[in-house]
Length: 371
Image (cartoon, rainbow, N blue to C red):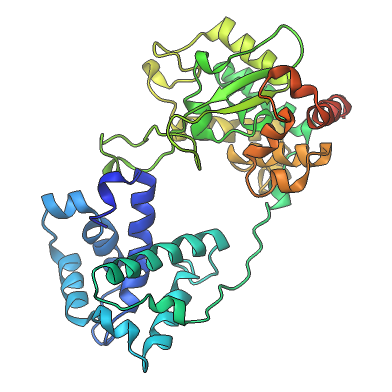
């Protein structure tokens, strides 16, 4: 953890701590006297695997006792490569990674992420000559198959999205375009939050426009960021620093953004969407507004269902619309961001948004305008 901490994003720090706090309690010589699972996890996740907190604070009480128990009962790393125990120990650790804290199966992506972190920790032991080779490579373990497709019950139809946006326009018009970005441009909330006027490189009077996205601001908790803020502004997910992503946007979103700029302007730093007093738009604010809109736009039965339960589900709904419009599934399913970039063809020019994919999406939007 200490090796990774200085260069890791706050979100990555929490992921590493989570994975290590999951697998470490399993690798023990005895379970006699084992502390409560929640107390043990709190000691590991919140202190032992938190470099700054471990160096600046002292653990006390039940958590200190839990960590002392773990130190007394932890296996030596070399034990993981002993022929007699290797298979049982590694399988036990990986089986634990495959479960959530409540014992239900974890998502395949979560399992893969935690396994990679555990694998990397053992690779570091190889680098330090503690282990001759990574023992995970000697175990033919396969994670249980878990469906990763989007729950169709959360996907809103175009007319439902329009009703939701209309409800937001009625109560919080300065946020209508924010939600529109999630649906029409497949943006993550963290990406929409840091959208700036300079990112809107083409908002024509008619037709398709273009955004150039370069940042993301996920919520991670102030204790994990270097600045002590609850959000960390970074590069786009799965992108190197300073790499931007051109995104063609349909006329519907162009109109929303043009109206937003005309009526609400921007924050002093150019951000289109801000919270109180020009600060960052918080997850709690846009989450509450979304639930208010659901209550206004949906039936009681729909409100009680998963339908568009989170703002993020607008992104799922937009991707589904793209698939129905003819955007190739391989372009959309693995990484929804490519559902927008595929509209370009090979040249990131707004005019090419009317290529095959762009035209398909445009036609679908037109067909559903009265549905």
